[in-house]
Image (cartoon, rainbow, N blue to C red; front, side):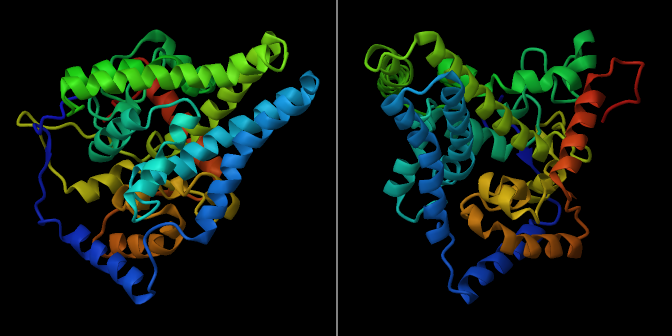
Length: 370
């Protein structure tokens, strides 16, 4: 992770592809007199997904149902957490939800509502992932995690041979790790690596806010149901863990289906820190769409199955991705640039498992991975 400018994208065509594409996308919004931001459908979706998280919790507290129904409500909350992460806070923290930055800020902080930190997420996702997609040691989102290997350029261990089997169990731990430790780990890491540009005083205030936010979150989600509403703590804890396991699996799988699949590249900079490619073309080499024609999936995952369009136009609300995807695809074909996609969710999932299997093979058991 070296966000000091030493890694640069060097374009030989002076960004002609992206200049052409951006002009065509701009023309689409202008000619159709459409805002790039959220529309009424996006607002309805936001309300629905927030309700999927909040209403089951209110029902738990109001009726204190038995364990089976209680776990079902926690399960629904897990789907709500994932939905908020993919469809609400994601657009807002990119500045795509509204032209009003105050609205983006409020909607972006729905991440804090489910236990995360909007500030840390912006540094990890907007700066590191979107700028250096699939570049090892730069893209935080593809860093190896415990027993998982997501890059062909990192150290391989014997247990990686089975990661295609056990990966999904660890995916379920993502949001639990996030609310417990990840935000604090990133707080210190981003300061040490220079990703966080704030002054020492501002970061001290941010750390205090982070601690207070976590205390409020855990008090509301774990303490209040037990001490105020008399729900057995073990029952609350079981539901809490189920909620995060569901949210973790959904969020991780949806993200991995865009970048850790067959066909994507993992370029490394040369000795001068240069990657010989235009940044926009790099995005198409490292990103794959999936299930573009599945309207229900597109609704729930916030257009993250249109990951190419999202990486090229992160400040455009995802409700517009289906329309502009045709512009992107046709322009890419015109410039002879690959526009990769898996037609169905099943195709994408199989491709991800195949990639995990490929990255997990020990040297000598497979062909060289480039």
